[in-house]
Image (cartoon, rainbow, N blue to C red; front, side, top):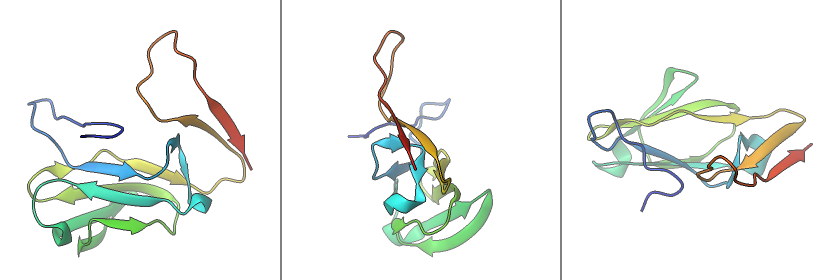
Length: 112
């Protein structure tokens, strides 16, 4: 199953998924966030992008983030994931990651 999301392209084909091991967004560097890329193909065929530039090619499908930035992954069979931002700000307002509908109660937290 896709937790917490299942990205789908406009044509209906499934895309690569970039999963974050935190239930809060934005992810913060000081939580030692692990990113995992899921998609078809072998796990060592993942190409990682940071801030729009190729960063690692043919690397494992997961790693612990050590630098703030915007990350994407690419798997040969399923293409690019959606971007994920990891911040290193001294004060962060976070929201729980889940599907929200109008009228839902939203949980926020302020961290420093």
